[in-house]
Length: 435
Image (cartoon, rainbow, N blue to C red; front, side, top):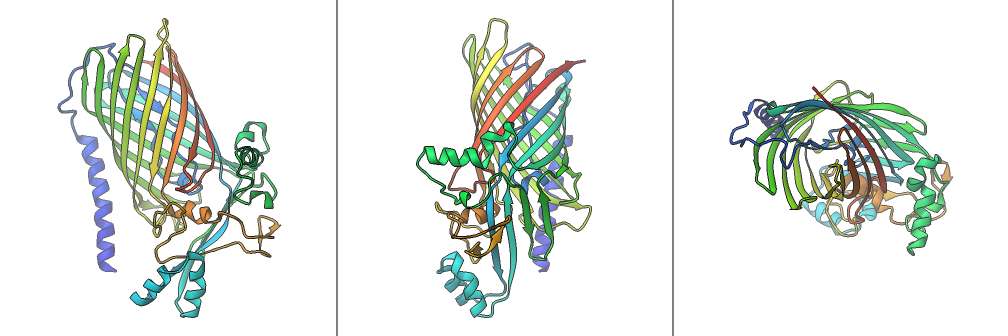
């Protein structure tokens, strides 16, 4: 126990030290870039994070690449919404198994293990999770540009849980998703039609009995994020541009559900290549290391037990420049996030969990006001939404004018990962101001 505590404290100190290094590190090795150059405007996309029912309470960095040339500021309004339907499942954590019991349990299918734990008198701790509805995020982001001194990004997040009845949510509603499944020959592959469409609730209970409960129509503040970016190296040639930057991040809770402060560091890289005078490409990547419990303002529910988590983004864009120097871009971004809880074992079918047991809704049980008549198919995705890391692809279209930007994103995850959330859409409007 003492050894684990020491390791925990060491990881926490490491994140804090790295954050301080980024804040005080001078921009050594930075080459002077002539203006207006190939890269004159900062690249900011705020709607490239999954709307996971746990993730909205923790650190989610914007995707940002700075030019670090000018002093100015800009204001961004972002709006995202995604379907978060997952029928209830309970995960069992066995305590103090012998090596023989561990080997025998792992040889069983995960839904057989709870009965095995009971028959062997093995004590367990349990976590129960279920979600339904359309989860929304409305954010306000302020970018302060300080030239070579770096950039600050302040982001305020708010959320609303709805059923999906509003016209704007139709493409993320249960009704549309099931129509789409029918069109592609996957008729009700999740068993969603067993239940009433477009209800809304988030339920989670940890192993200590603490609960997270959010219902239809609940609106609440999420987090206030402070981000600082500093140029590390830049180089511009006649038809290409390269840059590396560092970032330090702090997430402050503004909600009653998860009162923990998170922090971390990141590094980002950009390669821009001019193909012809009015066409260029962007290839960028972002990698971050975060600690999700630097400080707690209360007794928080245990919904993240991997304190140090990794996340990453990749970004590929094709950019077309008009004669009036307006830019139309489209491309693909991919995001990766570690699992929120320990215990998963990656597999194509998402049904292998080391040591853990899983139980799903059975006929006769009631969930979300409906009595179950048959086992919900692909229920394994419910527990996977807690334990499997997230990999999502975001298609985006963006228009950049002289003073403002507008972008639209649509994203989907991969079935070999978690499905939390399902399909997700995002809108972003940015207005730039000079000094």
